Image 1: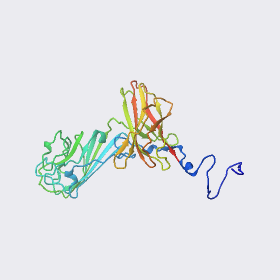
Image 2: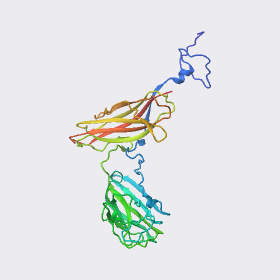
Image 3: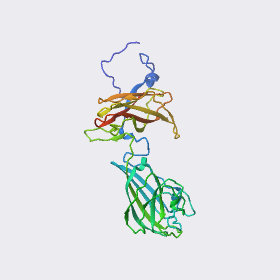
Image 4: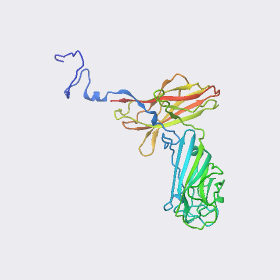
Length: 376
């Protein structure tokens, strides 16, 4: 090298720098672009969802319920649902417009699309989605017109296939939820029996006329208590005091290993070097009290194939201990051989907790999630 110059400080260039040869020692433009740096990316806690129903969103709106085709194919018929969780209650709402359905010709006939159309339920109640129903009511928003005004509500029916114009009594485990008589506008009535797991149906309460409804709108409201929850909650805490975190319910005294889950998608950044190192780092521990037996966290990681299928499990690290009041980092190595920039990783966090003593509030907590990967 002829006449090398040593600069005593930083070199600031306002403009482009053109390099025609190599940079000593041994750094070329190609090698500079290929050089890797392990860079952490912190993942917002708001990304994580309950694993068992990825359609649930953080505001508490759950996956939609679906009516049978003997209802949904009615001309002008509306049957829409909303299931939401607020605090410790799950509320199920069903709005149904009878327009286009037929009342049959005998008291107790299933209401649905005319012609003995099958699958005339208005939705399915499950403990996992709707909880255990403890209260309910019906609100008549518009008086039934065209067909029988005496509309009854039935539940806990095991079959989803009951057809229009067949007796509701042909179902299995059928329970009459309300026997109101003729409805008037803006009337409310409370359920006299609560639906258990099974399908909900409408049936005529008195002699039908084998006529199609031209009107009649009802709002069904059900309140339930959640089944034992096996998901990690995103707990916001108090702003300026707590940061959002993922937490298990209080599992003290559960006497057997229970699993709690959260699921989210992590995208490899465009700066990621294909096939480079990928690590997912959790910062976790216990709140208030440690478990008498064990508390661990594991990851299950799949790569989206962008066609509703996925490839995995890519996580090469076994479950790790977080049964300590001192929070610590736990790293999970992701097999990178098939990974490229922009790939989406479908990540399931699995916390396993086992306690026999119930000595206090016992919750596992994930305080942060980081994606670490080689970037240019």
